[in-house]
Image 1: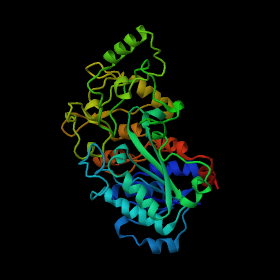
Image 2 (image 1 turned 30 degrees about the horizontal axis):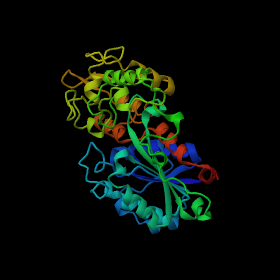
Image 3 (image 1 turned 120 degrees about the horizontal axis):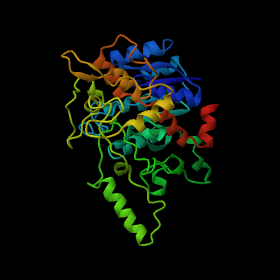
Image 4 (image 1 turned 120 degrees about the vertical axis):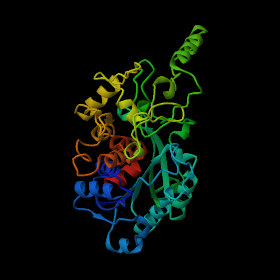
Amino acid sequence: MTNLSLCSGFGGLDLAVEQITGNKTTVYAENDRFAAQVMAARFPWATNLGDITTTDWADLAAQYEFDTISAGFPCQDISNAGKRKGITGARSGIWKQVVEAVRHTRPRLVFLENVEAIRSRGLDVVVADLASIGYDARWTGVPARDVGAPHLRWRWFCVAYPTATDPERGGRYRWPRDIAEAEGRTEPADGRHQAAGADERVKLLPTPSAGNFNDGEALESWMARRDRLKAKGVNGNGMGTPLSIAVQLLPTPKASDGPNGGPNQRDTKGNYYLPGIAVRLDRDWVTVDGVDYGPAIRRWEAILGRPAPEPTEPGQRGNRRITARFVEWVMGADAGWITDLDIPRAQQIKIGGNGVVTRQAVEGYRRLLVPDLAAMAAA
C-alpha cells in the first residue's frame, strides 16, 4: 500500500494520509531544495521526482502502482495573502500536473489540500478537471483551532475517488459535495467540531491565514446585542458567536516570515504578523498590550505533549527575532522535524509556514470519509 506525494513540503499531509490509510509515501515530488532536504531525512526510503512539471507521468505509472495520492498544491496565487490570481496563476497552475498524475496512475483515493479561498478562486476548475478524468470529489473546510492549534488557519480538504464508486450511480441518494454547504453553512456541519464558545475567549496566535473580517464588531458589542435579544425573550442557544468576533486573531506562520519577516511588519489592517507577536510576548504568553495567548498555548502544549519552545532568540544585530522551533511547534510538527536539519533559519521558517498541520488534515479527511470511502482507505 503506497502513496505518491506531490508538492510535499515537510511531509505533513503525507503523515496524515499514512495515519488514515496506512499507506507509506514511496515517491514524492518536491522541487524546493530545502523542503526536499526535510523529505529526504524523514522519508529516506522514498524517491524524489524533483520538478513536478518535468515528470513523465506515463512512465511513472509504468514503474509504480499507487493506492493514494496526496497533494497540497501551491496556494500563493489563491490565498488571501497572495496576489489572488486564482488557480490559473503560475504557481497554483501546478494543479494541472496533479491532474495528469491522477489520470495516469489511477489511485483509489486522492487527498487534496489548499487554502479556503480556493472555493471562490479555482474550485470549479478542480472539480471539472477531476470529472474529466473520471473522478468525483467531496470537500470541506477545517480550521486548525478545531484540533487545538493556537491559531485559526482555515484550510480546504478534499477527497477524490473514481466515479464508479459514487453511491449516486446506484440511484439511492445524493452525496453533498461540500458537507459544510450541505446545510447552507460556511463552517463544518458537524456540531461536535465547532469552534469553542465565546465564554472561553481563547486568544489565538496569528496563523498562515491572515484575515479577520468581522464588519467592525467587537466581542463586547456582539455580546451586548445577544443580551438584548435574550431580554426580549429570544433564546440565545444556538446563536454561536462568529469566530472572528469570539477570538482575537492575528497574522501567523507564513512562508514569508522567514526570508522577509520582521518584528515590525503588519498586515493592511495594522495587525502584527507572527514575528511581531512573538517578540512582544512575556513569559506568561501575554503581549505588551495585554492580549493573553496563554490558554491557547497551554492547550496546544497538552495536545502535543511537550512545552512550547522559546518564541524568540537574539538576532544578528542583538534584536529579538522569532525562532524556527516556535514556528515548527505552532504547526504541530514533531520537535526537530525541520529544525534539527542543517537548513538556514529563514528557510526553516518558510518550510513551516508553507506546511500542513497534520492533525488538522486528519480531522478534515475523516469528516469526508463516509463508510464506503473509509472502507476503500482501509482496504
